[in-house]
Image 1 (tube, rainbow, N blue to C red):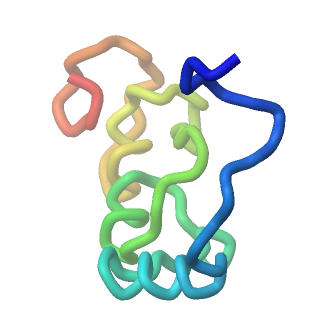
Image 2 (cartoon, rainbow, N blue to C red; image 1 turned 180 degrees about the horizontal axis):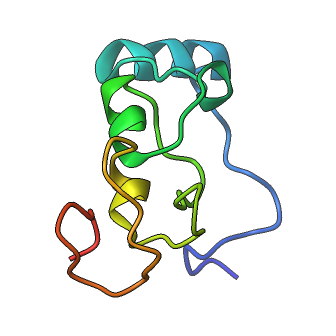
Length: 90
């Protein structure tokens, strides 16, 4: 069937993967792996230029909308209500 759909064999790659990865990093910048840092909040990920690769929860109450999950310097509200001041979740 020649309808342009996905087949069972991958398309040929004209650029080797290592070259592709090097070009990607040169264009977009290389992100540091999150495991190299102790990251507890959205702010720490952003300040260290690390891609968020997990759900970030407040270390005290475990809620994602708690302001402490957005910035470790803020107090825990023990709440998961949307729109809390300081929370990245509006």
